[in-house]
Length: 639
Image 1: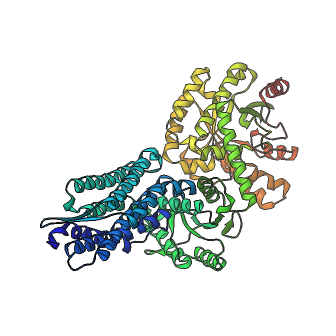
Image 2: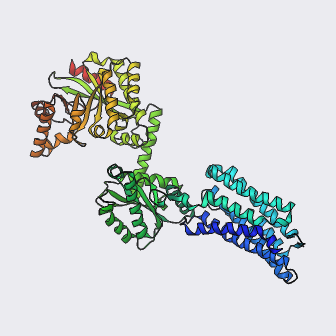
Image 3: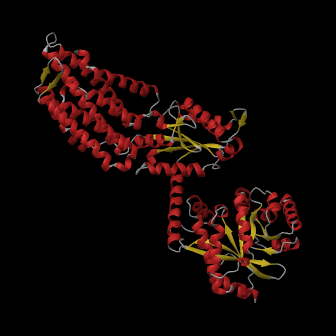
């Protein structure tokens, strides 16, 4: 009879042992939710043991005292109640992004638990024993089961009203697990002798374990460390707890280069090797928080922190052996104290990304700590980003024109169009190099480029610039624009809208972009050249100086950067003279027209003219001018 009445309990224990074995042998995140899940497992195990004990005591009432029998039932019901409350707290934490429950809410929701405890101590409990089944019943059991039903309703409520914080498959798992227990309760109510509550509990835990607490969900397969989701969960838990934690990020700045050289598999093996070293030094979990970033969370008061950081810094300075390759990487370490941030973890993530992208060449040291200056710098960055969004939506850009002097005709035959932000009061004048870089990073550069190109075309049509002797206008293209498949179509549409001949538009591409952009740039250039547009290589001398580009891609103009010109005059460097002279001779032999930028003195003008440069641009002739001033300048000087 005992075996017959314990068949469901034995099956439940078998399932439970499998779950616990898999749970214990895997590394887990020390989250608040994990604490409650562990608590739920402990009380579920105790409940199963008590369930078996109650069956034994009921079937042996002739030898077991009523006190022992009642105590076993009290323990069975108490562990069941605590396990369900742990489940409720667990779902609450998930639904509120690892936030702890407010005290007032906690007190209110614990009222049914308090009532159940009173009934557990003082309530009546009866037993049914016959040849076929044994079970307990009475006010004590009824009250506790009602309390359990109350918490199950709250659990399901959370999955509906806080669904944005719980992914759909996990909401389904919670509901399915809860409904299994409800269904089991109904079945047991209709057939009290089945005693299937233990099996239902284990099945409910199995659903939740596979969906939420399966450690594999938090492991990054590429590096065998914790993944980005695990990092966000853990940082959120630390942030909500109010603990002062340090986020230490090891950033591999040239991961793209390493992936190109070794392939993604060996690059991932390198990151795994770095992660193993970090784990060994800091004795804590390592997170692959971003494609090129390995992160850890440590106590800010750690006495060993300085020596640990120095050890990692020394490690990054050495070659890492990956397979048969010796890899020397470019990397740095960012350290953020979460107490700098008050609102949410989103601020931490944004600062992490900002520091990772802006600290590569900050100083000789590889270790960079977040400080007030960096916070202010990030605030400026965010302000400029917001200004860009506003400018795009509200005509917040101005195009100015810097005249280009033709040495042969002694007139201004062209100009370079340069973009400026109209807002100069919020943070002062913002250099184009600064806000264009932000526009590129934040996905606004195509729209910004369209606005500039359209303003140039509109200005050209409205003032009939060719009639004034202007042969073409130079318009800059960013590296991202160069390789965008919609670029030719976008520019063609704008030129057609304003009846601008493509030959009037000269498109400037920086030397670095020309080298990096590859086949897509060549395809776009061919398409635009067929329309009639011409091209300039801008900032020649500042990038890779890949001379093969000059042979492979036809440029109508090459613009010598001021960094090649100024050392000859401001530093009186003989080597600079030799370099400049030879670069000019080489370009002339290639039959390429040259524009010299940054011309500021008559001495520069005479030297460059004497060496065969045809076009000169710089403050010696004019600074960039607003539209009306440019028109007046051209009228006056080209008359």
